View 1 (cartoon, rainbow, N blue to C red):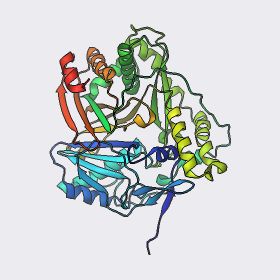
View 2 (view 1 turned 135 degrees about the vertical axis):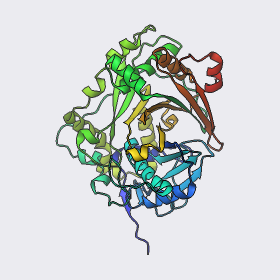
View 3 (view 1 turned 30 degrees about the vertical axis):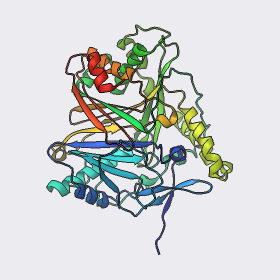
View 4 (view 1 turned 90 degrees about the vertical axis):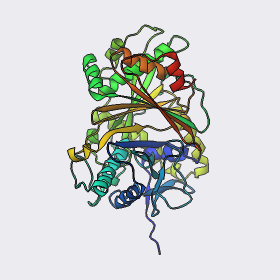
Length: 452
């Protein structure tokens, strides 16, 4: 008789699992684009199966009980498919016994897509690195082992990797900290059902570092400033509210944790234009400088983490039936994102061993569709092998700010190649490329590549 293994979902996943349906889910994506190899479906399936024992938590599926949601071991084969539908489609409530992630391939690109209640971006990237190592071992005989942050597929998982550190820090003896909601500028949104558009801005990673150094800010702060500048230029009326960009921060290094489950905290960055349209990139960068770092005091974070876990840990809440809790949680989640103009997630510089790097062109990271929160767009950034990729994910047809973001970067001396991928849930996505070099987009090209 089969032995069922189930796991409690981590604290952020209380919300993620409540929101997830077959029509909308918080799905994330990381992808590797290979230099000299085409994706092989049989090898993808083999590599995914080989990693099963190394990442047991990932090979799970969401189950909904009467009182709470949980993860159950999924013994079925991982979904592996050629890209033929919209990226980051919902992954939830499979009718079979497959894990709640998939591997999608097209040409020389292999993408991992997973439900956010399984892990965060760092956890997804950790899996992808191990997958790529095993895939290259199968494809070209590349020797593999545990090094450069890659978890070797033959090693046993540690207990800490499967620990919910939100719950652990929820036991903190100090006072819980609950941050008040703030009123910020929000873009006009025209959401389209089952539609998603991904806009990839690609450039030389060295140019982003050079401009960040010029303004004495981090790469995340530089791109945040550029995005805020784009909002200022494209708003229909002068912006009198703060522009609020939330930055998810990986807490593993700060709090000394090695979990592969969700363990990030969103830090708020704010810029108040006070109705001005003539703000410069230098002015915005000066205000943003150090805002993230100032909020990452470990002692303060312990109080914040306790505040975030208070509701989930409440015994009275646990015995309220799911059919009552779920609508309330959906309202609470939407409200929690009402004080954000957008989100920018940075997975940073990702490295591979030299023997693997020779086969890798670049990486891509998509932070999912946030229309379920009512958030017009979400952004993500990643660098690998000298290539920097900034992705805007949106089901909002109003893309004026993102057209302007290209202009802002070009004016600041950053050469950008733009790729646009768009599609509906049941339709093959189109992917268009426009190499802009040092020239500014013309209005015609904007219409052709950004649509409306």
